[in-house]
Image 1 (cartoon, rainbow, N blue to C red):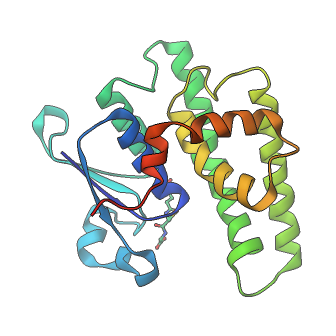
Image 2: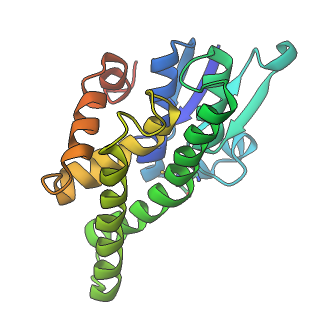
Length: 206
Ligand SMILES: N[C@@H](CCC(=O)N[C@@H](CS)C(=O)NCC(=O)O)C(=O)O
């Protein structure tokens, strides 16, 4: 059984997506960021950087309990444990890693800044808004160009798609619109239609 500590944010959905897609047995523990629940001493024992998502696998390698934070590490861990969505062949895995790391380290990090400066910040800073919006459009273009010749990010559907989807959905579809990015739209809609993804984006199970 995997305990998953998460909230309704881009990175938070990534953990729920991989758990639903792999079918690994899990329990969701909402960490209400609006109430600063991530700052409690109990949660910071699990995620010292006070960030969601984090998981505790009570049956980790060798049967021991293991705690993991960082969405990219969680995606890799769950996919490897289930033997799904992360190829074992070296070349195929390197391709998935390329887009997995681009998604986790570059795309989401910059998309979060876009979300902050253009949508959420009560203080309007036009220089920051223009900078992050241009950056967001540039990244959507990069993904669109790649998906013109690849069905999914790493070839077949994988954890590289799971790391990219939440910010394409939240900022690409909802804030900017995907009409200039037809290949990205095709990719987004195919993922959105997956039953596991719909479940992962649904309400927290009670
Ligand atoms: N690099 C981390 C980033 C995680 C992250 O940014 N988490 C945010 C929500 S999306 C968070 O927990 N923020 C609360 C805080 O920093 O106190 C990952 O990929 O998991």
